[in-house]
Length: 112
Image (cartoon, rainbow, N blue to C red; front, side):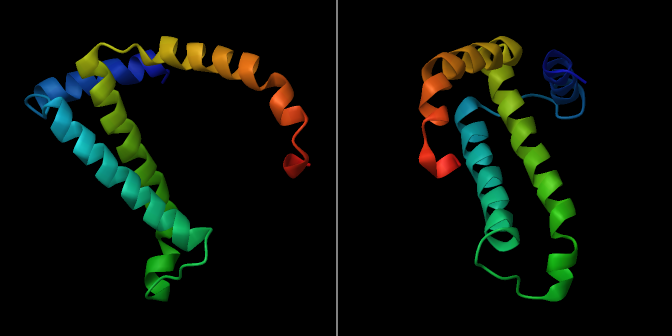
């Protein structure tokens, strides 16, 4: 599915199964919560923190995918609520980053 299709499918889900969108501030808080859940797993999978039990570690990569999907879902909700076309926004962001960072990253010794 492409980004536009994702925005449409989330909107359909919200308006049928979800009944209606939470307000924008509630969804922003939910987004922060979901990002925190991704951060927690990243700190344990790729950082120095450890899991409390081996059982938790065994399912963590699957959990990470689900948490990232949760972040995307709520971000799409916010885009839909605020009239943001995420396809256009991402394309514009890539143009901006390409223009701004074309030389910057090539000259960064830390990236070699």
